[in-house]
Length: 210
Image (cartoon, rainbow, N blue to C red):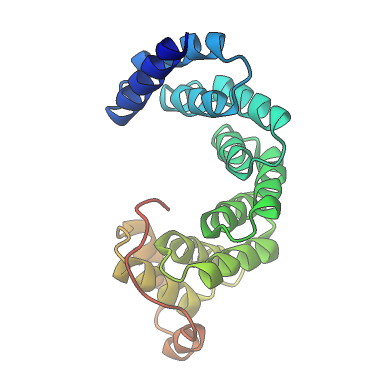
């Protein structure tokens, strides 16, 4: 039995690494029969189902994982991101809040929480979370990009702040965005405001995701 478990785990690692999601799902289901309730297996199944486009099933696996291990920060964050993908924004805010409460030093967690808050329309709280992400990791291009979006979406857009954070995201390796650049060009220049935003934010290689 132990050898079968080890063999299945190895197959799962290989399948997920090669993006063979159907194979990974089958092997994880077999593994879960051998290890009922295994949290790592549940989280991996959630990721695979999400990759396959079955977000509802992914949410089910993530919820079962955090039910069994309520202090699993990664599980709460995975759940929150899946809920946000499905449009369950209020639930996503709650799940991501749990994640960052358990792991307050996660820059990505604060970024994701900020994104969920922004989608809910709670912009002041979203801004605070995105800034907290940058306090923890000034190299996070995704946090800079999402701050740029937040400032552009204000009732009275803060073009200088938006320009600063967008250009910082690009400098850090983030992709250019034609829509954002068009909005910034429409808004004109505000160099003084942009300079005011620049203090204390480090530069460096970013993560690939936003």
